[in-house]
Length: 286
Image (cartoon, rainbow, N blue to C red; front, side):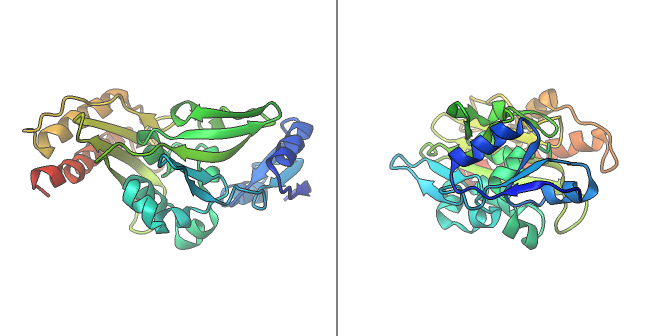
């Protein structure tokens, strides 16, 4: 591991000033589960490491009076799936957080780090995408809010400028009766990266399904809404429709972990599984 300067600021303003001073040669440290590996291997060689774990507000989970959820960027993923209010309001998010790595990783990894790392197979992105989340970003020019679907630009690439840091994730209050779920295909039982992961929501009032798929493109993919789900439609029919929609939008590749063909088949399977869970409650089917 090469030498670097280490700073531990306590305010967002100090963080952005340090990042601006470093002019693109800094890395932000939150949980460090990915960054420390890259530092040790030499894949990342920053001149400055900015530790944000003591920055005021970044380790907090807050709810607004309107019911919006605000997750500080340095909140550990374990706290997400252990929070009963989050599990009730946003089941898909709790399930996605619980699917990340091992218990040791979940105790250390942060929500902000998982998103800022911008891996196509991250488990928090599909749930947050279907829930309409946005990223609150701070930089030298102030703060801005970016819809999460616009936050990812490619593998390990985001919209963050060199002087900017992700400070919070905002999840809007769910519509009345909104149901959500997450699922994942991996190589082994236990902790492993997703070969394919997906999340979906169903809004009973509008009879609309929304889904997002990970590990099948250079970024997680938010599908167009699937509306007009008839009340008489069973999970099988709606699941087939959602699967067909997903296959029109994903762009999987062959790699050492799975083939593109396998990922397409598993995407369709996850869509059918998720719809069974979401619509089965309203139709009496399981």
